[in-house]
Image 1: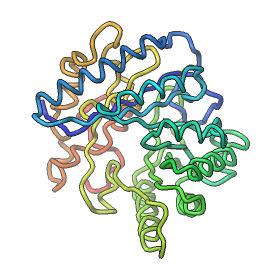
Image 2 (image 1 turned 90 degrees about the vertical axis):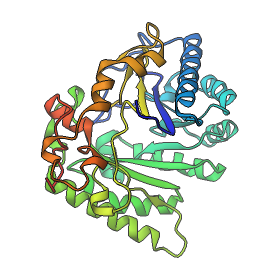
Image 3 (image 1 turned 135 degrees about the horizontal axis):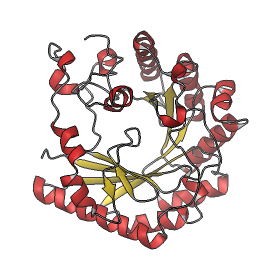
Length: 340
């Protein structure tokens, strides 16, 4: 097994959400089956055990990072209690929050500051009309106001952007908006089809993907060349290095990334809905080491279509969740790669 320097756990504590976004990966929004708070403690203990096991194997400390999300994590009545619990494990891992921003008032931002999360990420899908079309009326204003509150209290703030056919050309305008708000960072990835957003009309094709990456790269260069740059535009997602240069991105699902659903099911990634086991039935360390699908995911050879590519051994075929979503197989190249 390969060793790594970090292990991110994307923890979906609830399916409940106050929004019904057009591109959401969720199929239900019910609280039924959610782990209890006492079981949350078990999750943390198992995560720490896995980090210790990986560190022993590697011969150096493997860093941990828990990204708490949902659904909408603030919709869970025990969310703040969980944050208080996570602060007790700072020697083992850091934590961050991924949300839609609609629950973050000025008072809530002050409360979050006391927990000192590594960052808070809020999703924005374009400017006002586009974002509200995707996520709901007045959500652009709420998300923007939430970011202002975070910036004011000194919490590191991030914007996540999901590129779709209707919004990808708005990315430069959104970067300017982020700069106005003094957000620390903005990044983007492509929409992945799933059973809950079966309409594939919003999925970027290859030409649009290449155009989008060029748009992001141009915005990145403009942001970096400002006299007083306040917002970093990140380009470290699958295939983006083909335009931006730098270190090629390799999918980390199942190796340095795991996802945990509200009922305890473990996935390689939220965008790769393949259940590996349940943390209530099988310890996380056993799932990580023994799940057959994870062995297949980690040990699979680069796709044959990539054999002649210089970057084959570096990017290993691009966005695994996209190829898996479209073909059900791991040995297929990223369908949006234009250099094959």
